[in-house]
Image 1 (tube, rainbow, N blue to C red):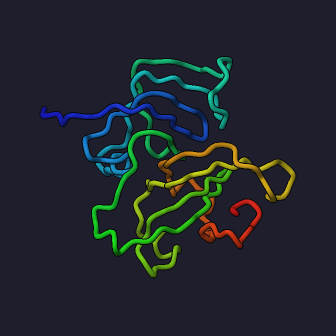
Image 2 (image 1 turned 180 degrees about the vertical axis):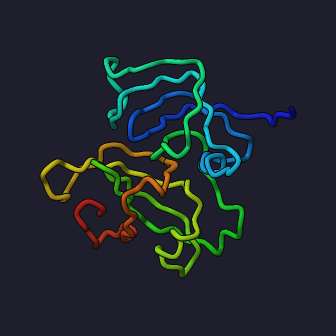
Length: 188
């Protein structure tokens, strides 16, 4: 079987049940979302995997370690989002795209960042045609406090980019791009 050369990247994979730390292997010139969107592959190979209890803390506590294994295949449908790899870039004409700032609501937290979409197209229309996994640039993680409104919540973690599973987000909220004159609670 012919194998393409691959680049190895450290990654953190967040599922509803676990946090998985390990290495993913990407075909050259492909981004993380590109590999996750391959329809003929249901699993993502991870080498040197450390499996921790679900949570958002980084680094995790040693007591949260559930297993370590030299190899595991993570079912893509279970991935909520991941850190690591390489950002995916549009193969089309970049002049046709614009960045939209969005917030993805998950249970107990929100990821805010920029998603590249076709110009002059409503977000709801884009969501109907976008592939499942997307690159969210300039991502910020906010934890939602229990029994409190989401107001003036400080950022918990920041990332150059993350790869998100749009099907795992409870909702996708369009928010304004940052402006020096605009302040809106969580997203400002």
